Length: 250
Ligand code: BV8
Ligand code: ZN
Image (cartoon, rainbow, N blue to C red; front, top):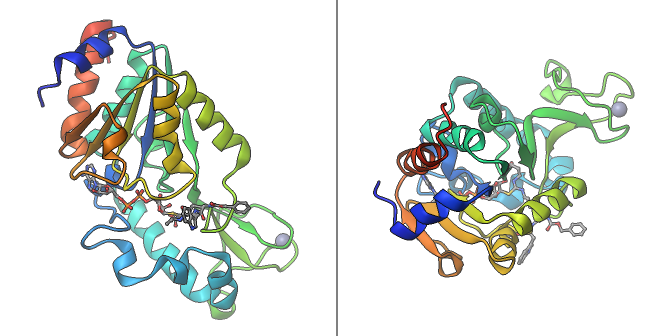
């Protein structure tokens, strides 16, 4: 994709880059988004599944949904969009990747400085004693895993609606958005808060803000540029420009 002269100029000068990703960056790996045409929310409503009350009411249904996603994620691989972000991280001095995704694909693509705002689907913990259990046992009653320490219910280590984001993680994300000179928002409908407040935070702090999405979003009007297209097509062009300019070899 041909980048604007202004963006190429910014890429030559920028030292600090902050990226916010959503489900759209994993779509080309075969992971369904939430709100797209064949999105995960089409079959289930978020209120039914991604909240604590739904889990207490029907832990088996919620685990069925998360196990379906865990098994799918184990079969997919990072795509050119994930890989390009890992390359950009190599090409600048200060890079922060903030993700709403819980699929671990950024780390698998080689990204190092990753802030998982909504947790990680491959991790679990006990709701009673908090003990981590990353290999929960589903062979028990109702196929709902129990804590090996206290027998309490084990839940996915993700942030549900109505739950606080991990405070230190979100504070670090806000600091990164405030100090960056280039903010790239990729593959998110930008409607879930507080994650969706980060583009405005970056803009108000003076960053050049760009949105990469296959369609315009509710927040498109606040970005300096919206690059319409697939993350796997557009992000490599950005990585090539930064690396070419910085002369960093992959
Ligand atoms: C909190 C769980 C408070 C993990 C998720 C009214 C107004 C404002 C806010 C609220 C409100 N009512 C309630 C709230 C708060 C609520 C919220 O924001 N609700 C929204 C829906 C209105 N937020 C919360 O509850 C948060 N907590 O606020 O706590 C609090 C305060 C004090 C004390 C206690 C509590 C918690 C939010 C986290 C919720 N958890 N998931 C999981 O199972 O995954 S949210 C869910 O949506 C996912 O985590 C996902 O990350 C997130 C965002 O979705 P996207 O990633 O954007 O995905 P989506 O499908 O929507 O969009 C995909 C995009 O990609 C599209 O734009 C598409 O065009 C694009 N795309 C597709 N293919 C490609 C592509 N782009 C590029 N290339 C492609 N190939
Ligand atoms: Zn326990």
